[in-house]
Image (cartoon, rainbow, N blue to C red):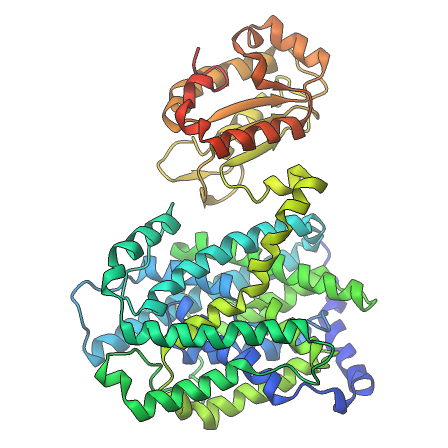
Length: 563
């Protein structure tokens, strides 16, 4: 495949013209860049299970690299809550917290070093994968990132971020839950440990949220009237640090604080490449999520300000940002919604805004680090939660999305899978049909991991309860293909009964329906399992999920599984 190497230099050339078009009187001020980069960087480092200072590193090196290579003029890169949470899950899985209680200083340093190494290896792996996608010119994937899909991804991840921060808000030390149903496991352990909450940290969290939430609402409601947004995070950090220092709550009430932030930069170090096979299953989804979020944000602002972006160049920019920054112990990064909006509102119009924010982070790394010593970690957790405000607010669009497109709405409903088979079902495609169906149902060989056809090992994130088979694309079915549907039903009968999966058939044309009838499949299907359209089947499935009928009736009502 021929690679257009000219795209490697397209962004740096445009950077020169940015000096002519960018006015210094529109430069983002430090009171904008400080709360939008430095403070969230330290907060999101806790999500990634690494010390806060590594969040500052991740707010510096990737921003610098993307400013030189990226094509999104209004994009702000750095730490992102969802990627940090995904990285933290990998770190906790590979380097779990010891169960021996309090660690000595040396043991804590060794544990942090191991966790930083794993996080850097994940960044290296995701960066290498994105560079590979750039070489293969896979930027066309951005055309499949619809707004409902991106909102579904961020809405679900926001719930995980919220629950992961509640222990810090309450002053509880709980092991992070990983794997399937980790959200519910975390909630259960949190409710169990609720009586052990720290009154001091609970008070700090309540006061912090009482300051942050109204300030953010004021900034949104009076955006046009305020000459500059109110820096609520800066005020909160200053107040919390001063009060913690003067009252010694860290020693009197065992309030967890940030501690010493090492000055300067870490020594460049190649991540442990031996970890790559172990973190590949984590690096791939992180790379895809990073590109999905970044490409979506870049497209939104490109359409708003009438310019174009190069999706393949974005793969290069974000891949290089992750790979090179991993040499400086950074964890995975991408574009961020909150900081992008902040910098745009502050007057940033080109990648030079990112370079300006780097100078602010640099000042923190070189001179201002000691001022954060007494900052309570509960305050950082509150900043994490408040930064997801826009993501939580977008859930209000679900009723409107339901009226516009029920299929787009159901993208955000866990437990429902709409499987479309877009080709004729005959002897040449029957094997592919069987493999795709079993993989999407999560009923392949193995426990929690299945192998996607012609793809790598991936984890089944949510258990599927209702599957809608969209046969609108099946224009023809021969005897072999129709019998394959019957054989799939028979092979999955026992497993459907165990997993309680309901299969519904939608939009099957008369020719295919006649073939299925002749092979005996439709003799075992009740009328409430056949639907004229996918929308009708999806609406029926949603009602079943909400009523809990999928767990009560289970296999007795599944397609052929109860016969």
